[in-house]
Amino acid sequence: MPLTAPPVDGRLYGVPIHAPRHLPVVNQVSSENEMPLRLWRITALVVFTLVTGVVLLSCAKDPLKVDRNRPPQTFLVAAPVDTSVADIAYSYRIHLYWRGEDSDGYVVGYEYSWDDSSIGAFKFTTKTDSIFELTVNDSSQITGGTGQNPSTARTHTFYIRAVDNLGKPDPSLTIYNRRPFKAQTVAPLVTFTGAIPNLSDSAAIDTLCEGTPFTVSWYGRDPDGIVTKYRFDVGAYHSPLTNDSTVTFNDPGIPGSVDLPSGIYTMTVTAIDNANAVGTGTVQFVVNRDPETVILNQPQGSPVGHYIQHFLGGQEVHIEGTFAPDSTVPYRSTVWWTWDGNDSHGGCEANCINGFSIVLNPGGRNDNLPYIVGFTDSIGTDPQGNTVHFKTNDPAVLNQYGFNQFILDSLDAGIEMQVRVAARDCSGRADGSPATFHFNCNYSPTLESVTVADTLYDFDGNGPDPAEPAQIIRWVGLDYEDGRTKHAFVILDDTLTLTFSRFEDFKIVSNRDFQALSTGTTHTVKVRVSDRADFLSKLPDGQKEVIFQIPLTP
Image (cartoon, rainbow, N blue to C red; front, top):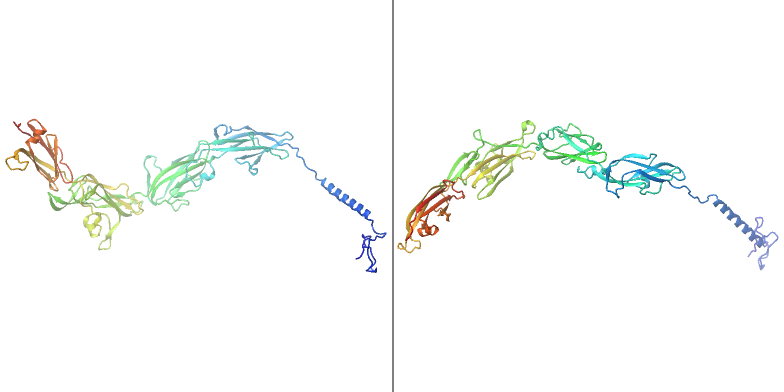
């Protein structure tokens, strides 16, 4: 193993290269050029000291900084009372004053913010006062909404902080430079102008021809500010924010015109002021005038109805006739009318009718069944290929085309019955004031006579010997349709009422029963009749009284 020594002059000294390889090495061999070990250690210590000193000197070039600049202080000089202390509202337009102090420099400006105290929210100003206009609603609340006013007041918080000449802001936000308070405003007002609405009749709803252009105009005013925008909502249409105060409908030649089909509409106009408060106004109108319906007459004059009488004096008959409004038709008759409709309105709309309906109310048929025919247009085709429209409920026509369910037969009795016929136009709007026809059904019965006569009658049925004195009461009641009256009401001595319901026309009452009702010799019988429809005979002639004598029994 070669013996080496520390390098000297860049060379490594040791055992000569030609020395015997088997020469044993016992100790490290040094030469006069070799650095002693002690000197080596001293040299290393000097180098370490020098390096450490260099490092320390380099650190001394950037010593620790100490900020001796004191921050400024900020004070709100004039501001509303803190809302958390007193529930007081102030105008949305507010004038605020502030000042700042700096003990070791001077104030160069201020940073302020509303409702947000994060660093990026502050804005710089050199002023010591400003007038601010605050909002009471977010913009999202007034765009695309329903037009309802969410609020006219809202709480805001104002932040202000002074900045000194070295750029340091006041780090505190306390009661001296932070102020929450409630801003309040008055909602704007909307007033409509022009032909819609009709101001001469505030209760009426304007009706407009379908497809005819029209406009709605308005103006807005704000008691404590200015109106900045409008929005309107009508039907399914919701306008964007606009400066316009007029809208045109159903005019394809005008840009921005809104198309409104047939229907009843409530239009809401929303005014928005500079505080984002909203106020609304509404107007109602109808697009598409309703069609007109008329019950036809024959000949010219009042509307006329037709009937078929099926019973007369208790016999089945077939008698056809006509009747005028407010007149009477026989009980159980079949009735019908003929009608038509128009929807031109002087040419402002197409005259297009696509159906009629007819309703009997009050009234019924076949023992209180309702008679209601919904809107029906075509009921068939005639031999010439023409469409037959539902313009009559004549049984001859309805049977021909298979619509016998529309026949108004077996009419129930009734007073002040009413038929209503309504047309429907091709936009689906029905006549709001249908054609009407009032009439009555069933003639009241009459009481022709009442008699009382003495007689003998075997009340117990044991033969003639036990017959006892009695009175036979006879009446004659007539009914126009059924011949005889079905019901009778017999009152004895104003005390006892006997009821009959099987076409009876007499009754035998013993003298003994009369004397039990009244102790005197004078007695009375009163009779009134009614028909199968329960119509009573009309007073005063419809009730007759007989006064008679019955001697006292010894």
